[in-house]
Amino acid sequence: MDQNSESSGGVRTGVATYVVEAVVAALLLLLGITVVISSWNLGAEWTTDGPGSGYFPFYIGLVICISGAGTLFQSLFGKEKNTEVFVDGEQLKRVLQVLIPAIIYVGAIQVFGIYVSSAVYIALFMILLGKFSPIKAVIAAVGVNTVFFLMFEVWFKVPLYKGSIDLLSFLGY
Image (cartoon, rainbow, N blue to C red; front, side, top):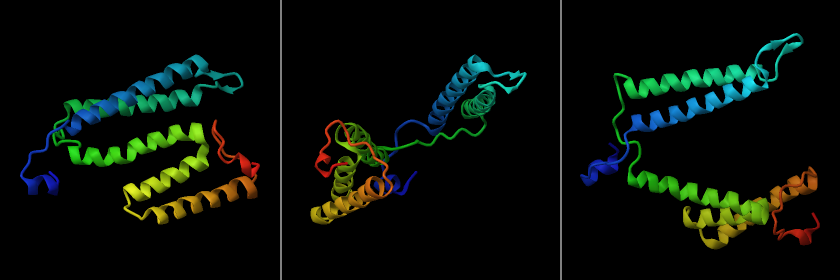
């Protein structure tokens, strides 16, 4: 148990760690099977002029299958199952505080582009989770994205995605 659960006297409830390990192992096994089947369809055998296009991915998929199956077996039938709770409510809340904004950020890139979305993401993260003042957060967010804009667009001449609504089109890039 973590220190917070012990000090509050509460009992941690949730999914056991070995169950989460088994689910992840099963997903890896499915991924490995998908790679093996796809590689076989591409041509996983040795041809007259060398390996087929699926030769190396086939064996990578095979290794993933073996490790996924081994982990799945060990997590379900091993002698030392980890029955501790994988994550409690407070821990899950902290993870979701980062995960949900990150998912929204990725979606915002499609609409507003990487520079505007990144500036908003950095500023809101600093204000809401970092407890920085809004002025410092906006200055940092705009400063970081200005440096990235200059570096990629101006100096390296590598255009990054501007989004379907290009709010920076007035810059001419």
